[in-house]
Amino acid sequence: MQDEATKMPERSSGREITPSLTEALKAQRNKAEAELAELNETIKLIESQPEIQKVLDALSRLGKLKRF
Image (cartoon, rainbow, N blue to C red; front, side):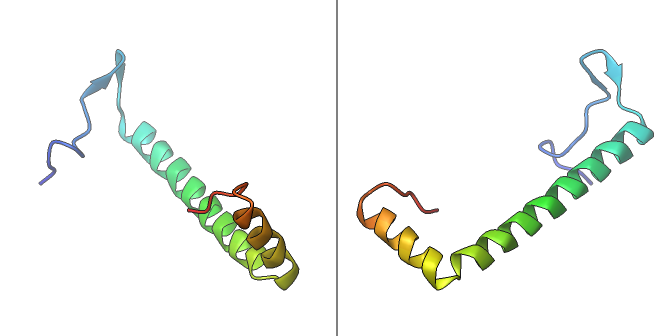
């Protein structure tokens, strides 16, 4: 059973949400999530390099870098 937050509407902007559209959106989301995971791994790899870490630390000390 779906709660109200995840329930898909019958219609959106006058266009019926069909199973094929739902599947296409799921595939697009999965692809985007996979790309994001790959980018996050790349960032971790880059940040782990000692030379890069020194630059990031210096920028952070200068207040020029916001880390999340």
